[in-house]
Length: 528
Picture 1 (cartoon, rainbow, N blue to C red):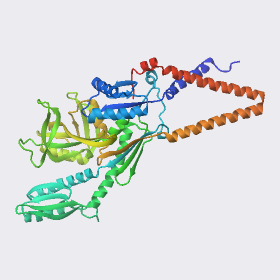
Picture 2: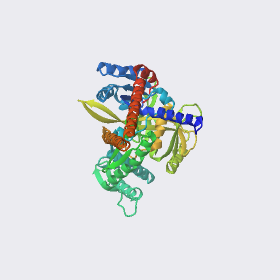
Picture 3: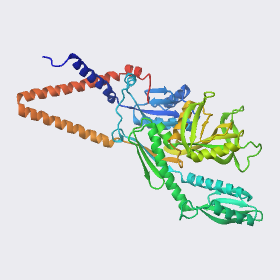
Picture 4: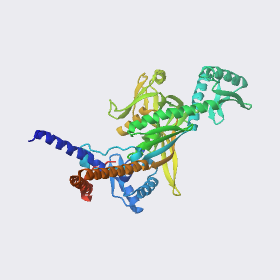
């Protein structure tokens, strides 16, 4: 007599079917591929697809498909050797406008992806991953520190009404050129009392003040930042970057990341899997930030206190529009608290809503109070790693771009909340907001080493696990045969036949789902 209702059996059957369907994606092994995504200024379109296809065909590299998926292009190949060759050739051909990275493309059919079925994410030991060694740029840290003291010295001398010819940071220190010996003495006293003060009780002053070269018309004073302070700032920048990089990795959703310091100024990052290496390199290797500077409206030559930049807009002659900005920064990305990509409420153009901390908000308030009606520019600064192949070896360089994305008149007084426009798309606004929200790096980082980690530990554990299962199964079969005699042998035979049938069914399902015609139809909606 049946003790259970039919609907209970139906429910059990439904659960088994759903479990089988949602476990099915794990059968499909990812395929080696090369992923191409655009840097700032590049575009992913049909022309790029044809160019990549031409590179592969010219060099007789076999590929199964080249898929255009929104802002990314994916070239699927058959093996890792072809993948490495294709990556090197495509990167050389496309140049630094594109990021060309290794990828493992999903082969899960589109109908499974449509119902939310995807392969189980694996850790670094099971699927391997990418190892990055990042080097904190010590020179950038020193330059930033010198620029800070240079601005402080300039402000202190102006407030004390001491005339000077120039203030220039050099490798040997900040050189202040004055007009007389009396001015040099007075400047030294002002700097010592206003600028060169220890940040903590008991510390030495941050700079050493010495007299520099003297001529008939100039008297130099040199302010050299102490080596101990520089080393402390490098260590501090490395520690700060550790936190920032963890935030950035969380933004791109990598499972079980390893991010740790190595030595004084190096950071090791290990990311499980290579499913989106291009995005990882872009997020980790790029240093993106904003600086807000006053526009120098004076025509003619560039004055010493200003610098020539170029806008993102193109002029009538087909070239970027030049613009002169003050060297003094109003606020930087270090003082940013939050950034969100939004459409401009007035005209719907892409924009980034910026929120500053209290210190940055106070600076912006003081500046806008004194400069209503004048123009202020937002300078987008990005440092992107690029890879080229020279004599068969990878050579990594780093390209820094500084571009004015917005220069507009200050319509009213504001402080810690405002928006930056001039972005070309919502995607660009989202990427900028992501980098700024994840945290501005205390110092730029360079990817000095990158390689793929094989899944050797996981493979070894899997082999041992399979051996353990087989030995355990054999032990059960032998025990059943000895204890139950004939009935034990019959039960053993039934168990073995069921296992063989299950393996045959799974093999048939995988072979059917990966047939060229069916697979081609399912790949009409590519993923990466």
